[in-house]
Image 1 (spheres, each protein chain N blue to C red):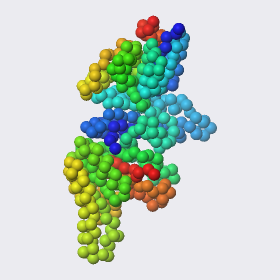
Image 2: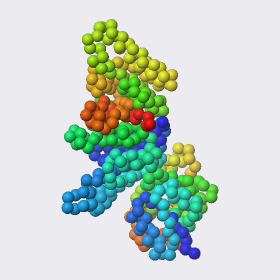
Image 3: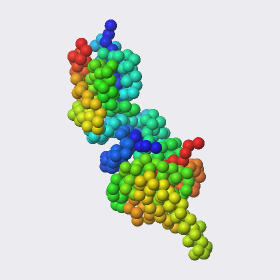
Image 4: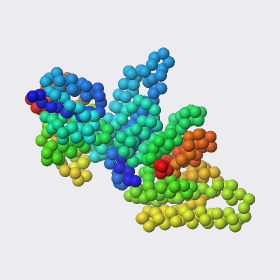
Length: 292
Length: 130
């Protein structure tokens, strides 16, 4: 699971060169190739009532994107990086999936979704769509201006939030490959408040001890691979607990196993990985479940 | 027999422009849309000239140029870079790769920064392969 090639999906306003520059720290591990993808959503150029497909608009948008990419590519080429570009008209998730397949990318980097809650309910969240279609991890990057707590390079102090799912356990293997970038890993599990509610103090402590032991087993694996690691147990709402842990540990990225719930279930009951990816101030790395 | 010129560019409009200029000047144009496809065609067709873009999917022109110039069987093929990427960037990137331990490669003999005028393109091709 080495990251040699990453697909950087941008609309420029939510993910700019500053993000790209921060990700260049990954060259210390295996990163050697960055592919840019800019998707012109169909409704920007097509399906206009009474006008049909506006090819001239598509050409104008493509050229504007190309000019930005040439500028970015020149800076990366000069540092010895390999760079590629796709500028496509289509739907974002479908074009990302196509580019990942063609390029055999190891990681997808996207910005925070610009959709409103209502749009997300009806058309689906971009993150959910991507996770459903991709077998590679997705990093939802947040601009530095939005993340006053985040200082350092993206993988310097990762926080793995585990729910013991196979995908969240895969996160550990994934981070092992990024060892040269990592200073220390924080491992956290948020115990559902309901699990200890009404139980005795002894039972609550037993729950804490059991969780801690499971976390320590993972820590031992990381430590024996030469990566410093600490474990933490939180109680409460998973989304709030993860955010609190990330702030307290001064994490630079939150790493979660992504949900394998189907679209409809997720639309109605939600999912912690999606909520953290979309609401947290921390960059969020979503590790997909193993595709069947 | 007409001389073969391979145009490697991901932009179909640029390929159309270049191949039209080539045909109008009596050359036989061949086309590839990225570096990987370009390399396959170079090995199969051994063109007299390769007109190479830099910023492309799958494999960039910088990487393909390096592969050509470090391959004993291909290093003498003539290459013209035709790109929106500045020549100084191309040279710096090759220098950076050499500093990372890769073999040094010579500077391209012909470099045109886009956009290109049809007459300038035709004249440069003539200078390269007659």
